[in-house]
Length: 365
Image (cartoon, rainbow, N blue to C red; front, side, top):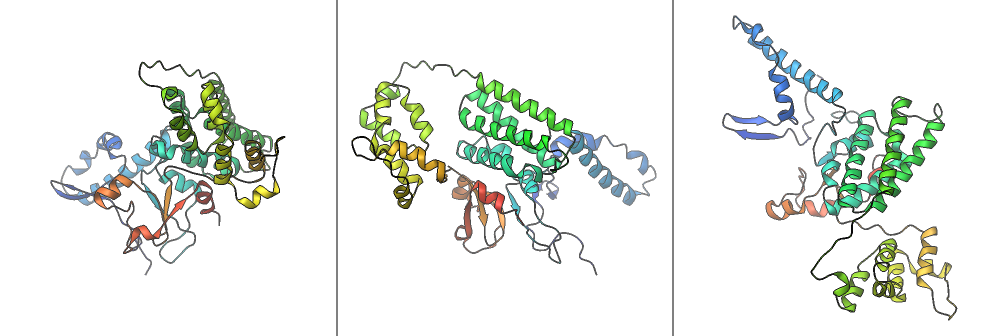
């Protein structure tokens, strides 16, 4: 007998408690309720003899309305708003197929993640890696979702004037990849009409122009500013930075910060944070006085070796459940929620942080 219904090992549906009892929670029901209620099904139940038929028609019509809603609404961002997804890499008797990169990108809530300052850099780096190597592997729905999330990121940067350098690098890599793929139409696989990609490239160029013309207003404050802090406190702030470009940019603010940003020990700590000591010996650079020029050495090393990535919050992968999810630390502390339906005795011991590159590697079969 064939297996019908959901896999018995899956987490199951989401249920909500109402006055009439427990009901299955359906996503986007608040948006689709009006459309579903407009169905003229009362005529089919005149004699109250076809209740079963009416119920079947209701279910089919509701599903069709949902499908039409998602297909016609070009601004729909994702089909699901889950915070976790089961990563399936092979077919079993109960589960057929496997999870793709595009499906994971659609299911995980990246649109809300960019609003979290701890996850913003993580999402931007992931979009950059997808733009460099995985853009052709995305389905049409995943591509639409990708550019919708990218548009939200650009609008956010234009509004709050934060992290424009990261977005400029992302758009540069994306436009370069699109130019190469569009020149090789027929040799590479581009899902969708070529005219759609031309419009997307024009939109990216328009975003780049807006970011280049971005003028960050000068904040006037009557209270204490960064330059009013003691030197040792300003120096401690610089030592917390892990990005060389941020150190150089902050050093251009005042002469005092410029002096502190040129400290040899500061650049030595930065080199030790990102690179190993064996790498120092291969690219040792000495100054005219015979000292190690750590600043020049850092920019030399980054040409040959990748820098250590550091993010405030990342996706988590549960080795016990094979589930990829966003872990909400506040809910974990208050409600002792692991962030996904885990069956392990100690869920925290099964979690592994997922870097952006690791996220892409999970879906390489």
